[in-house]
Image (cartoon, rainbow, N blue to C red; front, side, top):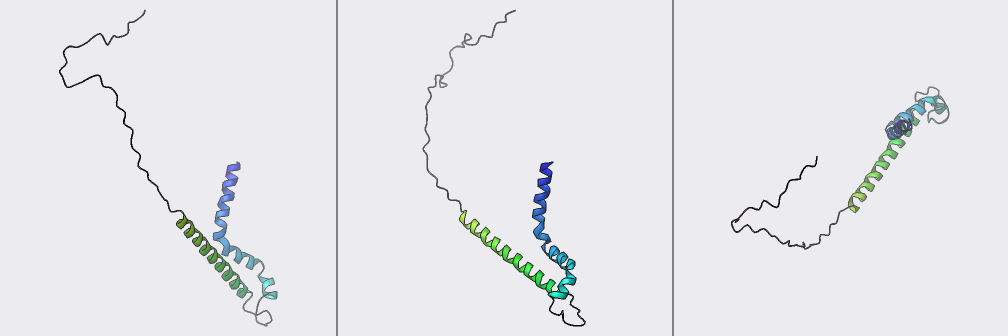
Length: 126
């Protein structure tokens, strides 16, 4: 059960940055009346057609500029990491050690006889 909760939590953390402009828009819609009365540039006009949308555009622009700056920063860091991780291989020639084993069977002559005494099948004990 803990694993499922952790998986859902991590998935939400990965998806939150992609919904950033959605969060800006929802907070604007929730506070639109207050924004249009206090922050809006055209708040003193009698027929205010802005209704705080100018602040929404400023907030979205700020969010997109911030996101773009973070992406550029991340890209620079990735390039630095890519440049720093150049593999350097130092190869060294190692002379192989040859071991000669004594070979007792020479195949350059014809066999003279066959020895049957070397192989003895196991005797069965009943």
